[in-house]
Amino acid sequence: MVKWDKFGVSNLAGEISLIFGLLMWISTIPRIRRKFFDLFFYTHYLYILFIVFFIFHVGITYAFLMLPSFYLFLVDRYLRFLQSRNQVRLVSARVLPCEAVELNFSKAHGLTYNPTSVMFINIPSISKLQWHPFTITSNSNLEHENLSVVIKSGGTWTQKLYKLLSTHSAIDRLGVSVEGPYGPASTDFLRCDTLVLISGGSGITPFISIIRELLFLKTTFKCKTPKVVLICSFGTYSSLSMINLILPLSSTPYDISNLELQIEAYITKDKEPQSNSHIDLQTKWFKPNPSDVPIYAILGPNSWLWLGAIISLSFIIFLIIIGIIGRYYIFPIDHNSGVIFSFHLKSFLHMLVICGSIAIVASAVVLLNKKNNAKEANKIQSLEVSTPTVSPSSMIYNVDRELESLPCQSLVQATNVHFGVRPDLRRLLFEIKGSSVKVLASGPKKMRQEVAAICSSGLVENLHFESISFSW
Image (cartoon, rainbow, N blue to C red; front, side, top):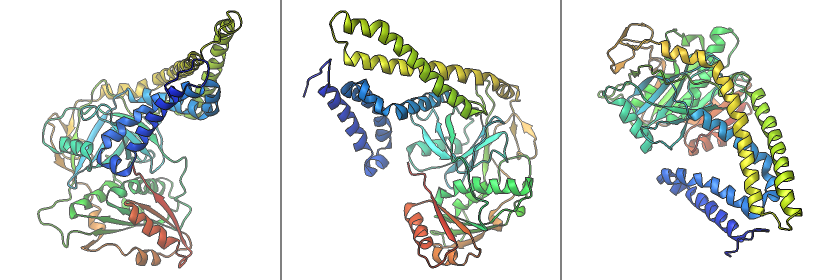
């Protein structure tokens, strides 16, 4: 049980690896993961020791069976590490009365992403190690210079963020690091006659990016877009403010009437509009900092070509270096001294060379692309230290920082609001006309399962269901 064999299978290394694996597995139990998220999150850093001792246990020869997937993981993880070293430019934050905030970042023109993409965010002033994924609500085609995410207050981390931004304290800057965006390679929203979007609570956020994409296609290319039916369910009247996020924070006015959009909102807890509740959005603007950079693609616009170059070139360098080590260091010890070279030292050398090869090539490519993005970073430095006093469309600036309401066009006024009831999804879906109806559901698991059961019941043939889940 405690044997560490230098020339064969090490039982002790395998047992240590197993312990680390069991600790990670225990922390993933739903009750533990949701109640003690920090414990779950930090425990999973043990994957590094799990892999290292696993390789010590089986030897590098058998570990090569998982080399392709492990190699790609190392490349991706190191690129994410390089991207996370930069602090990005946070332009503004829209504060909602339903304890949610929309963060608006500056981004490079060359950064593109598809609707329903997600991005990992780290705010060192709240937690230096925690990274949380959030849905991107902006559209890269509609908003060339901005990227936004919506964060609903729920756990400890999000509550601290909302409290920080909702107070009237003077905050010049909020340090933020990001990883991503990550999302689908393509979308098929135009392949249907009607697009039904069903959301519960903050599940509306991925649908905001979809509606903005359709708005861009309609206003720019004048192409035919499907009719959009948004069925959203909220607990309280103040949560209706999330509907106003459909319109981007921009100096360019967008006419939502160009899009055939029907919004049905259901307020389940409130029987009528609350007189003491308001649904206006408030915006907090931040001063630019010379050290902050726009969010940009870590490998530039030709990311797939650069990624292929990193994988192939680093692997070639790994083979060359490990071949030299084997020929001029390991081989003489095995055949000349009559001593078998240590299996664990050989495994360690292979792991070291793999990591070193990836680090050298990936760092060189990232530095090369970073020079190409230097112009975008210089724009941040040349911005005036200023803050809007009325609205982004007015472009009137003042050095005074304040929290204010945006007099933006309210979509709530054009929304059919139903108080004190839950949506009758079966009736609503059966009433949808069209030969091809795509149904997307995002929100609580029970709601998504109900929508899936209705679409698969066979009572109607024109419903095509797809679930969007961001459980973490």
